Length: 234
Image (cartoon, rainbow, N blue to C red):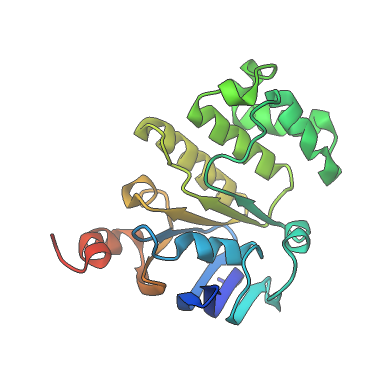
């Protein structure tokens, strides 16, 4: 499969501290790739680089085979890269309907945005006039996904989708993510809690201390996660 998103030997730093030490990662259309690892491993930095939000020290970022290293995040977003950050990414003081209305800048009319959102997440239709900040955590994450899909992304970047949510809700959300991928979107998911995503991922990579320690089929990695995370089998 030809990758839509590629990071090639990417190194990155915060001030003088190098946090990524040569990351190689690719995601193809229709594929869900899980980026796993302990806290502080460099997962979110990798995602921010993929969205153009954090600069690359060396190496390259490629989108659809084209080198886009250093391209501003706004331009990457226009090219189809959508980042849904940790912490939902909705306007809490606005209604569900107004949150969707904000996405009409993409050129899609409000009616079409609502049809997309409410057909995929029927609960949002029932909450249309409710303030987003009063939704449950799972419903807020659904709204964030619905807003992201408004831009018709080629690449969807998700940071800690499961954060603070019940396992049943997480499974429901990842079912939706899998469906989004089946429609041809390349999905890169960062998760600290591997079990939340491994059942839904096509490929997984484990990053530890800024380096990818191992990658492959999720089932092949599942048994090794403890030792990869902790440096021991404990």
